[in-house]
Figure: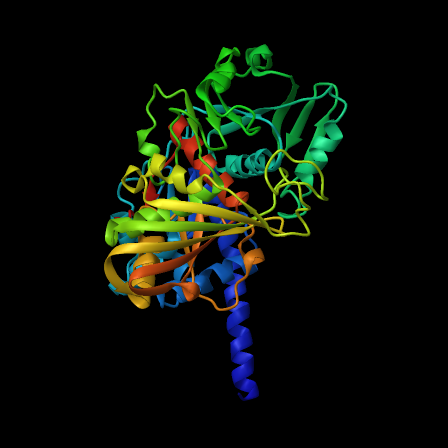
Length: 483
C-alpha cells in the first residue's frame, strides 16, 4: 500500500474513534435517563470503552456478513435519545443491519416504525415499575458475581436492588469481604468503588448501600429490621437443595420468595431462562436456577430437537475445577475429587444430562452424561454427541444454530463463534448460557457432535439474574422482536 493509502486507513480509524467517543454519553443517556439497555447483537454497549465499542461493531461482520460501523449506528443512537423511549432492551446492531438492508434514508421514520411500542412512552416520574429487594445468602464465587451484575445493572433502573448479603462469622471480616468483591483473579477488578461502613456493617458499592448480615441459619433473621421487605433470597450456599430445607428462608420476616443457584431436588422447578422460565407462577415461592452445565446445554438441545429431533445422545462436560475439590491430595467424600485439582484431570459424575428433562421433558431418558474436571479456574465445555431424527450436514447445522443465536428468542442464551483460534480464556465474562463453536461441529447424516463453551461462573450468573428479573416482573421487552 502507498503512504497515502496507509494514511487513509489510519484516518478512518481515528474518525471511527471520534464517533465512538461521541456515542458513549448518548448511550449513557439512554441507559440512565430512559432505562433503555442498548446492545449490539447481544454485546452490551453500556460502560464500554471506545475500543470495545469498535470491536463489537466488527463482530457483526463475522456473524452477519454485513459491515456495520459506528458511522451507521451513531445516527440511530442520536435519534433514539430524542424519541422519549420507554424501558426496553434494544439491539442497535439488529436495527442497523435491518436499516441498511432496507435501503431507507430516514432513520427517524425507521425507528418510529420499529420501536413503535415504546416511542413516546418515557415516564419521567420513575423507571416503569416497583423496585425489588434482593438478598444474597452466601457470598462465594456465584454470590460475588451476582453482586457485580446487579450493581452494574442498577444504573439503568434495573429495579433489582441488592439490599443485603448474609454470611457466617462474627462481623470482624468486613474488609476481607469487600476485598474479595473488589478483586477477582479470574474476572478482574470491580468496575467502580467500594467503601466499608464498619459501624453499620455495610458495603457501599457504586453508591449502593448493602448490609452484611451475620447469621448461622435462615430463620433467625429479621430482614424488616434492616428496612428490607418482600425480598427474594438467592441461596448461593448449596447447603439446602430441596423444598423443606429452602423453606427455612420463608420463615424469616421480610422474605417472599427463594431462588436456589444449584440443581433443585424433589418437586422443585429447575428453571433455565429462555426455555421454561414462563412456567414460574406467582405462587411459586421456591425455584431453582439449575446448574451452569444444564443452562449451557439446554438451549442448544432445544434448538436441535425442535429442528431435527433428538433420538438419544451423550453429554461429556469438560469442567473447570471448583472449590469443592482439593488443592492437594486429601480426603474427600466424593470419588476421585480428593485428588489435587490443579494437577489432575478428574473423572467425575454430572447430573446435568438427567436434569435436562426437568426443563425439557421431551428429552427425558434420552441423554447420558459424564464430566471431567480439568486444571483451569473457569470456563468449561460441553460436548454433545447426538443421534438426530433426520439427516443434516455441517454447513446446514451451523447455519441453523447461527440463526438461532442471532435471531431467535434464545439469542441471550446461545452465542456463536466461528474462529479456529479461540480457547477457553476467550470466553471469560461471556454473558450467554453457552457458545456454539462452529469450527468444531461434526455432522454426518443423523450423527452430530457439537462443542459448547460456557463461562460456568459469569454466564450462569447472568442466567440467574434473568430469572430474578422475571420473578420480580421487572424485565423489559427486547426490540427489535425475534421470532
